Amino acid sequence: MRRRLAIVYVLGTLFLGGIIGSPTIARSSSASRQEAATSKTCDRECLNGFVDRYLDAVVAHDPSRLPVTKFVKVTENGQKLALGDGFWRSATARGTYKFYVDDPQAGQVGFEGTMQEAGQPVIVAVRLKIENQEISEIETIVARGQMAASGAQNLEKLGSPRHAFLEDIPPAERVSRLDLIKTANKYFSGMQQDDGKGDYSFFADDCDRLENGMKTTNNLAPMPGLTASGTPRPAPSPKYDPTAKPTMYSAGWSCRDQFQSGLLHFVTRIRDRRYPIIDQERGIVFSFVFFDHSAGDTRNFQTPDGRAISAGPTTPFTWEIAEIFKVRKGQLHEIEAVLNQVPYGMGSGWSGWEESRSDQPQW
Image 1: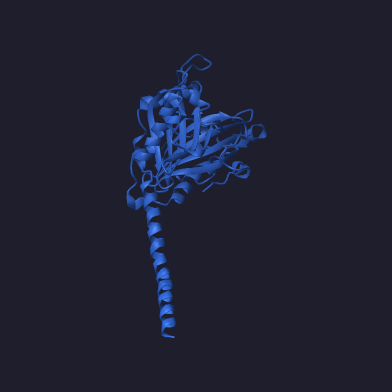
Image 2: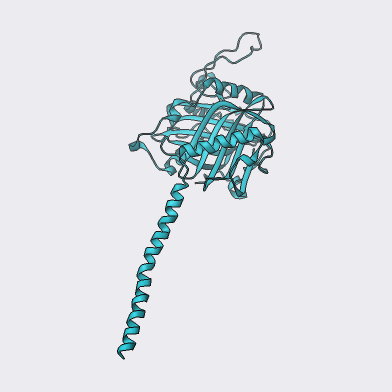
């Protein structure tokens, strides 16, 4: 009997020891995994380095320079391509304008900059997703053509992103990722079929916007060319004046005045709203969207003062856009966008059919 009791005691001790010891093993294993994950986290310098490696590889036409995952996904101007195809074949040099937007928490980085393609200036927007020190997603928009070429030259003259974009938000003023997205999304919701009667308090007084390198707000430079009478075109009005009965919004107006004019109504739908890159420290939101212009009857609308207007494109088309917002205290201060004209209704290649049709934000 004593012998049996001794055996039971020993077995029980071993069994309990195993139970008690197993959490220690689990914790040790969990700690090891966490340390491994931490060692592979990509900070700002790391994320920017991946962008530089990507652009250098594109110019060299050599995808083997990039560490990519086995199933890396690549799109260019909304089309799914094989790594090394498309712009990889035609890019000839990097430009001097470089704007990085880092999101270490999501392991993603955005970039806007100038490049050369077949010897011509272009503007590119890039999104990379980094997983375990490898690139798993590559999304690129290339803005080409005469206007983009002029805009690329403007960006290079500018030299670097506007200072406000690079300023850190004081820790006490920082808000959640969701709050940053909500503020940026007000811009798209306010523009879609704009009637000029919304609440546009999300615009700061100093809000300014660049589109494909061109200043499209607060731009009081005289328009190039001559009027029908042969005289120089006048400089745009600095403020929306309904008594002047304008029929198109002006690049000379502020961000808020352009919306209050109601003259952006012809943007019929802003859809597939994705917000993949959020920099909370700097209050920056890097978004991807599509602006649909349906033409036809959607060109006919009323201004806030009751005037009947027909404005906007006469045939349907869509802008594919990468848009960057500087948000501070719930307001938009700086906006910068890369636009590429695409077939009407085209999708991004990153959303399902329902999301690509929807004007609701993808959180």
